[in-house]
Amino acid sequence: MTQTKISKAYQTTISAEAIRELGLRPGQRVNQIVEGGRLIMEAVEDVDALAGSLGTGRRAHSVEEMKAAKRKGIFKAGAAGLEGRG
Image 1: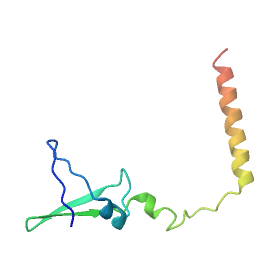
Image 2: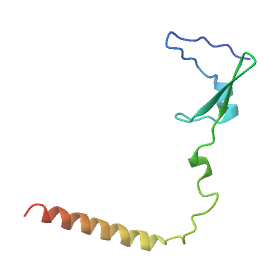
Image 3: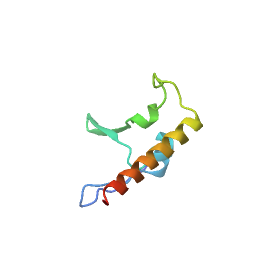
Image 4: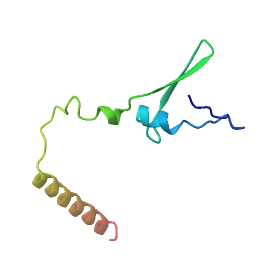
């Protein structure tokens, strides 16, 4: 068990042991539940943790297709920039 102090801004620190045990990351959300005089914090699984678990429903693109799309985008952006100078 670890004790922490509540600051004047009502903030506290989560112990390194709890962070490691729960696999918490900066910016991750946690639920706070009050039960019988206890504060329970539980990690919220974010969308990033679920990424790819259901698939996209679309076919994957090859590296060559992605490079071609990048070149096309750069060309379009360059052409749009030149048109704005006229």
